[in-house]
Length: 300
Ligand SMILES: *[C@@H]1O[C@H](CO)[C@@H](O)[C@H](O)[C@H]1NC(C)=O
Ligand SMILES: *[C@@H]1O[C@H](CO)[C@@H](O)[C@H](O)[C@H]1NC(C)=O
Ligand SMILES: *[C@@H]1O[C@H](CO)[C@@H](O)[C@H](O)[C@H]1NC(C)=O
Ligand SMILES: *[C@@H]1O[C@H](CO)[C@@H](O)[C@H](O)[C@H]1NC(C)=O
Ligand SMILES: *[C@@H]1O[C@H](CO)[C@@H](O)[C@H](O)[C@H]1NC(C)=O
Image (cartoon, rainbow, N blue to C red; front, side, top):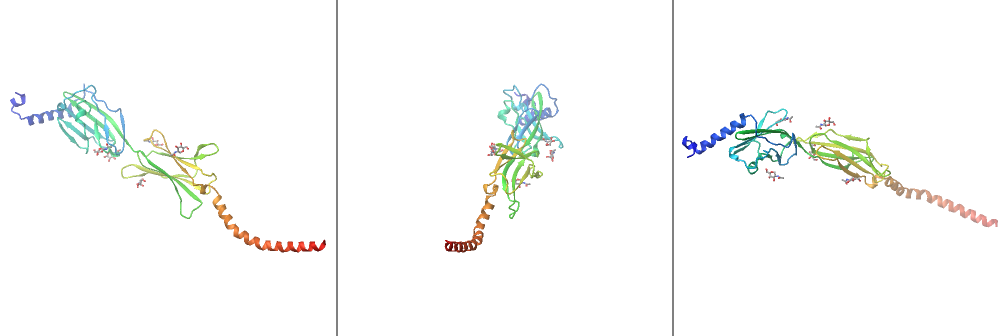
């Protein structure tokens, strides 16, 4: 005969009592004996990804999850501690929508929290509190959410009628944190290398999007026609979400990097003009030549 039935309790009541004791233990017991391992002090994840915040009980190959309790908490620099997820005695509750702990993994001592589509506002400190009666452990990790910029480089005519100026536009969007570096380089044919450009650059302040990410636009202003033929310009973007900087190339269309089109137009225009001037001159010259020739004939 089971002890709870001797006390006249139902199975459901016994489970409820066990849950209550686990909950009390999760809340009140001091951590000790048991240990959990997190992903270090800081874990970095990407915006909108399904992520896993690591919390493992080392050396626990086979746990009885009915006598286990887990609570996950979150806070940031300004907010109070909030409960995100709870698992107590076979009963789980996701306060943060979609939050889960895999029970299959939990049996192997892995209490890692899965959060689908992580957002920037969810960055902060996460606490994993685990009870394996009668022991309790707590771990903390700082979750950093970052977003990589989506960048493009293209030409823009400042105004429709302005044929003397052209802008190379380097636009990065959807990045976080807002710290970003945009530099410009130009391919130098003589030295066969890129050289940093420092003049005629205008970089706007980053603008914030609704999801907390930022956009930035940088302009390189060029006076046409530029001296170099087929010049290549490069926009070099650095953001902490990448191990190295990203380089985008843009080549000035040949027609706009040389003076030929203007000269060509001049030449084409000059043909009838020159012709109109030369034609009467030709007749004048022809007349005089014939005069001189006939008079010469008379001398001999
Ligand atoms: C992320 O999780 C959601 C459900 O929570 C799922 O529909 C989606 O396919 C997952 N995405 C990836 C890339 O695993
Ligand atoms: C902390 O979280 C609250 C609630 O989500 C948010 O309003 C606040 O901006 C966050 N503070 C920081 C410093 O991220
Ligand atoms: C952002 O950049 C500024 C200056 O480049 C630097 O002082 C600051 O520490 C950076 N912030 C972060 C979060 O990297
Ligand atoms: C940021 O860039 C994206 C993509 O180009 C655009 O859809 C969005 O409107 C931009 N946001 C702002 C605030 O300009
Ligand atoms: C830009 O040019 C550099 C050097 O010519 C090259 O290494 C790089 O791959 C190019 N980038 C792209 C996006 O074509």
